Image 1 (cartoon, rainbow, N blue to C red):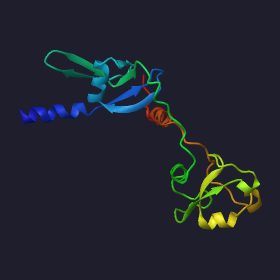
Image 2 (cartoon, rainbow, N blue to C red; image 1 turned 60 degrees about the horizontal axis):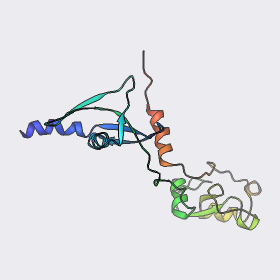
Image 3 (cartoon, rainbow, N blue to C red; image 1 turned 180 degrees about the vertical axis):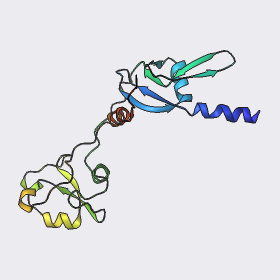
Image 4 (cartoon, rainbow, N blue to C red; image 1 turned 45 degrees about the horizontal axis):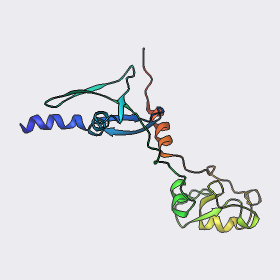
Length: 176
């Protein structure tokens, strides 16, 4: 009996892609969670040309679970807010790396346009900088110092959009 159970457990760990009501891919969840969403009516099946299905049986029901499901309703209370501009979030966005030289030691925050010259404390004006680069830039603008940013600073994206971009990049083209 234990061998029988061991063989059935892996199927419940299979991954199902969950789409929002507007067909935006949100996350990958395990089959157990997908079953709960389908049985409670919180999701419906999506069938694409390459959809794989798993058959799950209980004493009274046989379910066909696809590898793509769509939520039938959105939760209006689940609004994502752009995180505040603070040290932890800026370091996370910049991957704990100086945006001028690439160093990962002695990191500080730097305002691209200094606050004394009208710069704001916003996502597009604050970057991670090592102490050396920050002190050599000082209270000057980038063109005055000849320093160049490695990446253009921007506010973090909604996690669902990051997942969706990665999801569509990972999709293999369907061969005819």
